[in-house]
Image (tube, rainbow, N blue to C red):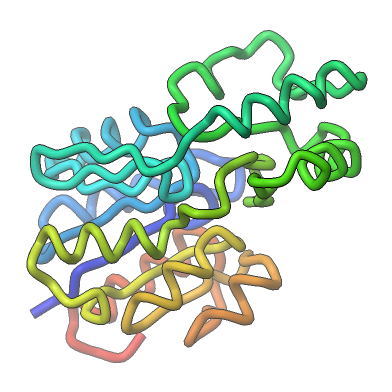
Length: 227
């Protein structure tokens, strides 16, 4: 019997250049336990990935701001405070850093994502002055979000809906937004490219990075071995 999984996407199911690794489509479609895609991406992205995998859309999106399991979508975050911070950030000369790409935030319901090329110091200054928000660095974006939601709480909701103990899950991730997931899951693995926060929180830090590390864990679990 394989365990249920809580899997980050960027940096975990991807190649170093940001593409979804093809092994995702070899290892996950027939995984004989629930697979929760737990990501900082906007809600439609993990839903689409689950669809391409031929799996139920069990999703923790926007760093826990949106949770979908079964036929129910729950919005847990509130974007109002985050949007107010972004408005002030822009008024003070900040730039979201996405150029003309509006798709990054077009479908976000609970947070705003800012490019890692943006003025981090100004963004954090504005967020701290506003209060009621936090800035989370995933390595791919700065996420301006409510501090009251996270992936770990999302995993608890998913597990409850599925009738599974959260400690039954194996979590794999690469950044500070995965720390809360690691704290909830029974076993947690940080891929080799993980940031300091994820590395410190994980039960095991893998020798291989990106999907190489994730695939090694999944193949070992499927073989009934310790990763």
